[in-house]
Length: 177
Image 1: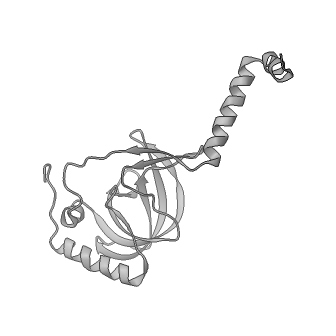
Image 2 (image 1 turned 180 degrees about the vertical axis):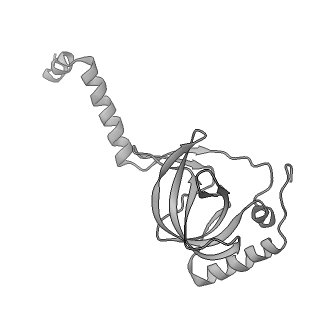
Image 3 (image 1 turned 135 degrees about the vertical axis):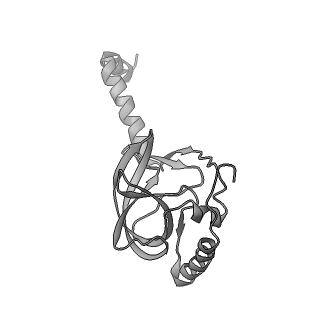
């Protein structure tokens, strides 16, 4: 029998299990995120900008300043960000607000995301479509459709015109719509 096999046979089972877990953890930390995607099926068609805006308390441009933390709500991970309000389309937010987005990354390298969504990132500007969560005092981003990244002034103006029109013709959603 080889000396390696003899050495392994002498190790307690708990040590072997621990070594295996460390190897597994290292693989997760070294590789890209392990992504678990959740599917959200809203009761109404949020791909229609008028319905999306009608379902929101606030629609605004904001610059993401920092990621503030993570919390699990309703069994799903949410990530909070500090966001500087740049321009309102719907609502009257000002200054800095806390925005929460479904999904996030875990300490072991996993990522939990709503299917088709992408986490917002610090130092970027987004058009954000949110509902106010009074218990937590934060603004929850609408999954998939509620965080459009802005790439320069031209994109900001294009999105501003598009969502101002949606706000002017907003449709307050009802189930099945």
